Length: 431
Image: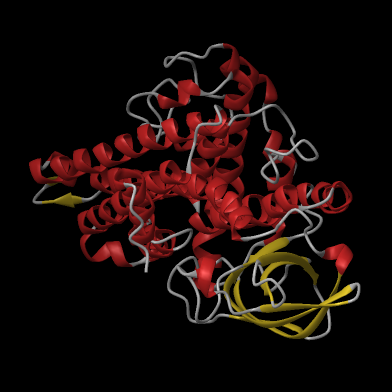
């Protein structure tokens, strides 16, 4: 599996040196074999109608093509089966780690110099094949590792980030609670009480991705002394810390979400994140990940669109392919318009992050808009398949279902629009 992540370096090197829209596809890649989703004679996705891939540096392009190849060879063939069984394919973790998917922005774990634009594009490439894999990477890299990188001491960063970057340790991010989601900044109920050099945590968390098999979970709790939110590294097997898999999900079924119970969980002061003083620092982590979720939403649209285009070319009705009907072409053009607009929005948000100009409102607009258009696009793609759009066999049904979870996490559309609305008016409308 690790070998397939590095298939045909010579071909990707050649592609990286010719950074134009007409460069040849990477020889021997799954993209070449599948063909239908690429612009003929190039390595560019057909859904990338305006050639936004050209924004990547040669090194970033090579990394993206390797990731695309890995996702096509190692994930696409098994994704529907694992989704149907609601299981996670742990065998893909080393390959993702070898590709530098974990901790790409932090010096301890960065495999090559990269931009927020590339990290967003990587989320698109992950999401267009399997949104659950994209979510797993987002939790491991964006939420858990970023929490340690932003809130941790140098010693904590050195202890945790390298093995997490190699995929040897898995992390999770425990913020959402059974009675607290959008109101986490004020409604957090999990408590932390200090007793000498030990903290005692009590409370519950819900919808925590990766938690069933995570080696460490970043738990956010409110200090009973000063009422501020603080972060704690809770290791698997700590007494009083239990996880229960959430069953019967109908979206992102591969992601292992869990309910967490904290009953007198004792955590050493050495495992408290010392640079977290309030929810303000938590918001810094969420800002980083929110923009990448917007890119993931674009990937979901691309995956559904590619499946719909393929189906329209193969399916015969009234003696000719669906693709030959005006209404079908109109719907596909609408989908492509949504995808193109969302890439442009996400691209500028990522550029602003690279320039240090991105605010909460910019990440919020990208996430809120991209996920809203995603819902629209996957619904249109499912509609084009008729009854076949509700079975896993044709590729759209999984995107249609998974989109609902991507739409909801990292801030709902309503909450993100309120963040943007505050920037527009100068007046907060939060309850």
